[in-house]
Length: 243
Image 1 (cartoon, helix red, strand yellow):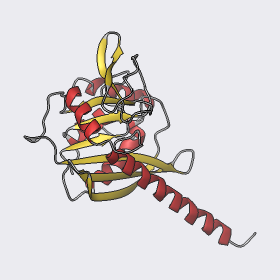
Image 2 (image 1 turned 180 degrees about the vertical axis):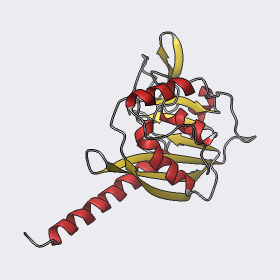
Image 3 (image 1 turned 90 degrees about the vertical axis):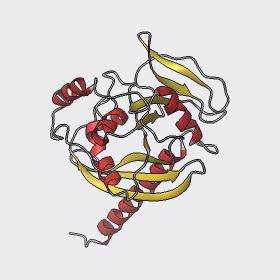
Image 4 (image 1 turned 120 degrees about the vertical axis):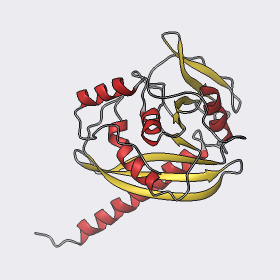
């Protein structure tokens, strides 16, 4: 997958907010999916190794087939992270590694699910929408926690959902991805409608996980890879002779 160069990445938080304000009107919310619906869906997630600045970001991209959710392809990528942790600006911290993992895919997914927000963002450009603009492909935000907005709890059944509202505007949907679990916050990223985003996310839900399978699997891969790297680092430090 190829990505467009819409802005530099070496930015201050203030400059990053200006980029969000400049790009916020660019996402499109009409469905741009194959006739009959998507056949390949990718999930991406991100994790970190180390603390402070700089650190290392690890991202996983997992492509599954629909409707059976069989695994088609998985990729892992690492990227140096220099942007600080600032709520609302996580795209500038996480997307470089996610883009690196997506570029490694040999298949081209019809839609990408991101463990982040899309339109449901204070400046209406969360990481899922930002990624969609960079890829110019359909993207969906499916986050485990709310960033902005108010809602009523959806009924306790798979697929039940209620609008996520901010100032009277519908900015996303609060979706029950499994009975008995906390809801998932779904929003359109780019080139997909909110209604279709909810349908795709629900179609990707299985078992007891709150997360849809593509992002659940990406999350599991990132956790396993960062654990492995930490163990390697610890073993290396333990093998060094005492000063």
